[in-house]
Image (cartoon, rainbow, N blue to C red):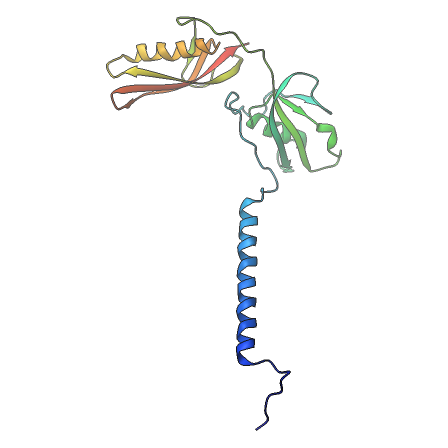
Length: 209
């Protein structure tokens, strides 16, 4: 029988090499998983929505700027679309994405090639000077669903009421919360809901234009 030469690897050495290779492969797979989870998704990624600006219907009015916006705006992030030839014109599809973000301004449109079918823009909402705090008891128009008048959203409001308060009393407290934020409209009313020994009512405060 031929004796193994000193240059040939022993069985224990081969086992060690296989073990190290398996460990390296496991670590590489773990790194790949972490990177896959953490890396931002490409395409139409959405930034966090601004709670002051609710979603607007497709076809809403959007002010367009080829370059940076020349008016004061609240930025709502970048939107992008891959145009569907069976739907509205490509630019309108992009503007509808701005509407869905709650915007009324699209800027940076000039960065898209004329023949491009993948369009991007910066969604924004025209900035309205914050209305001053109003006193409790101020006049506030109430809309159970979306307001039927032009408004600028101010933000969410919540009323905490006693368990034996009437719905009207709880609604007035919700209106007062809108007053304290400078609003004169409250909409998308929810509740009141019973929470322990109290009742909670929610809505959105806005200011009419």
